[in-house]
Image 1 (tube, rainbow, N blue to C red):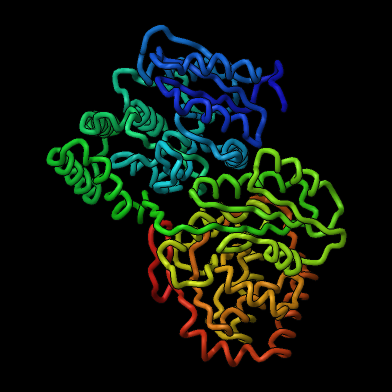
Image 2: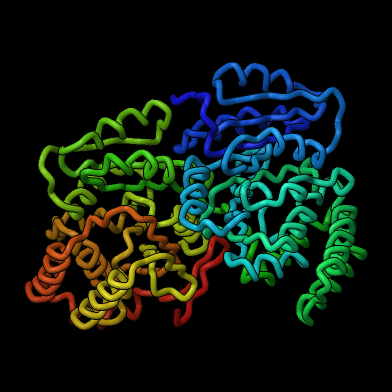
Length: 558
């Protein structure tokens, strides 16, 4: 593991701690597991009365990048955060709460965004919500552009505090502080002051943090007090900014005040989640239900991927662990030519859910997926492309859709779904995707939908029938089309689900020659098979075009 040197770190991660002995070690370990390693972790224990300080002293000895400071008295989160940011040496400052968990790629993803967007001073992201037992209970979405974020601050929290990253050079020195008198809403005051100073805000539409809601969060202890204090901060900001709320925001504010004054304190957080999930931002907080017991096998084919295999594995493992489901990740190294297999094998010691399969010759995606599926043990089996283009929240989404759709056999991530988000995809890729999708539609019928996203889940009994019959013969990238055509022909029920695709700069494994091979394979498949006529008559019964979020599946015209 890379240790801190005398040079300044890229990121200073600041962590205030107060009486979180149950969670603080796991929080620190999630920092140590970051794929970006040029960081310092500055922790301040704010006079804890439990074993938090003892745990921190022990942890700080394991890595020189960790620095711990201890306060004799409890001074409050505002005071503690001010001390922490003043000690930070990094180009960026990342907030980390002592009861939350970072995904392994959180820091790397945010640093990459900051480096690519030099005008942004405040950066957040989506987050997933877990309870005290690490059970996934919901997801939180936030607006991504500056105006929507700033306008939203006057009615809700559009920068999720646990996901915060600051560009130090963009923050006026006089504003780099938190008002201890405003705890626990000092962060809202901080954001509104930065908005008044014309600092640019942004959110990454990816899930990078797990927020733990366990009843002892500072903002949840007395929700009425927190809400009323938030209103005072917002009213002060409106006066200083010399602006007024729009009609819609004004109505939201009035409804919020009415609900807070009427409901008992113990019901307010549930009401807040219902409000945010059902009304604000198209479902900002979506509850996740865990009703059925099932396991999931994910196959990840990869060839010559030594630069991305580690992060790809950690992303999937992190996402699946917090679904609360039994799972296995089967990495299939599709031909040896670099260090991909060796890197994957090393991760098995700390990730018991990981299996690594390999063979010498490169055989193609279709062959690799079939080989991996033949080794799968769980009741649902699927595959996900390596790399970072497909946000792992989409995998969590597909898994949660199984709960609500027990009669569906196939779950397909679909870029054309109205709820999908396609970000930073080059224009030529969109043209290629549109053209290929139309070729497939022309040959097999429009009901095939989008087959190109490398994320799909199947009921094992359905996919096993195809594998055992040996009816799949395409080894290349057109394997997806062949698989979907034969599933539809077998009258499998299909649900097309939203996906977040965000092009992150990796070199595409699909070249011009591969595109021509895909087109040829699709034409060959149509000519040598009779699926075209069968699928048109049967797929009306077997295919559902619709929307499925992490909380519900709604069939419709999609």
